[in-house]
Length: 285
Length: 294
Image 1: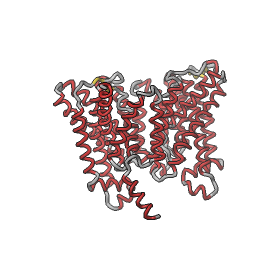
Image 2: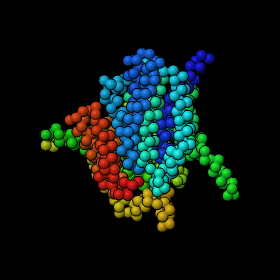
Image 3: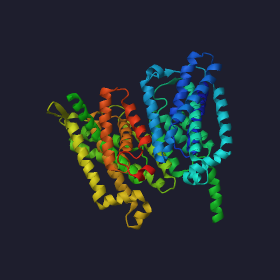
Image 4: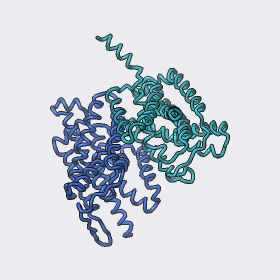
């Protein structure tokens, strides 16, 4: 029983961290920027906590300080990458992939700072209460944000940037805000992720986590921020559950699940438009 | 001086393999507009196919190469029809096909790691006698000669196919508009299938050659995918010449920067070039204005 409890607690912790990283991706996607860069932002948060906690041994001080540094650092990296917004859809997505690769090369090749491929251990200090607090705050923020004017403008930009620009929506500003917010959330998520893993290396914030972030948004539903929460929770829980039954082939299950969602449930699990569409088709019938 | 020339030559041979792969990448991206991350896996499976034929059936290198091309083409056709065909008919196809390709990439790579036992495989040396050709202080191995030869022949063949045949015209047209192609009596689905097979075969061949040059592991395709990405961006999308040139540039730059700048920062230079091109010349060296918009 004790073992099951430990297992589900660590799954809960990691799924909260993954949710915040997935929120970071969602915020970008919601403004029409298909971005893989969340994981690059998260890397800054991850290395922030790994560096801060040994220096500030009191967790009550060290953890919030890491959150602040991670959020600011992630936001700054997002500001640096703002010029990428000049590119349009496909190219922008490609460029964010390139950003992840460049950050990874830096992590690998600056072992003095990052521990390189050997990695760094993150001291204990992160607790589930910090995670729940951050998650609640972020949820509150997103719930308000997408009911605000900004949310409406972001939806317009996402559906058709040209039309949005035509009716006076400042497309670049909307996307810039989205990317910077994505950077901040990514940094926070990275602090949580590293804090709960207890160990980070050059492989931690790399392609597989980037894929999980985007996949969580698509799986949960790309038209509601709640989707990212659901998607990230499911994708983090699956390996833990599967790991008890099979020793290999986890990637096959994950990959096929992703494919099945895109093929048969394109709106994701939480799709606010599904009900509306159904009502519409009933009216037409 | 000789060393520099030798390094350029080595880089060129590696670049030829990248060029073959990038042609496949560019073909799929240009024709069906799919940002296909599963493409590296075609090369992995091509290499595994060639290894299997050479190790278990004792086939020679030519047969192994054909088997690799066949394997790549088969996987590519499967991915295209299972993963992309349904989604391409929808409006918002970019994210859908991208995520589908990610799913297939993860699944097929995991399958490859199970099949290979996550270990490094070598194509048996009996299948190919390796000579060292020397001329004027420079040397080339048989595999490097084969890579350069294959790149020249395949680039010629693909450019001929796309520019001078009816099938090539159909492939280019279907990338433009599916409906329009149907009106003039071309079957778009069959055309897309053929494009997928050609692209898969190219990737498979690149995989076999890279596997022969280095070694085969289940992550072989990932390196090719990254190089292919960079090559297509540098060369320009929608132009096969651009993909070839981009591949050669990446190969030479990678080899030279490993020697003269820093082996550890080799990748950083490649990706830095990728980012620089995206920012300052997004249509690449050859790309048209249309491709820039896309």
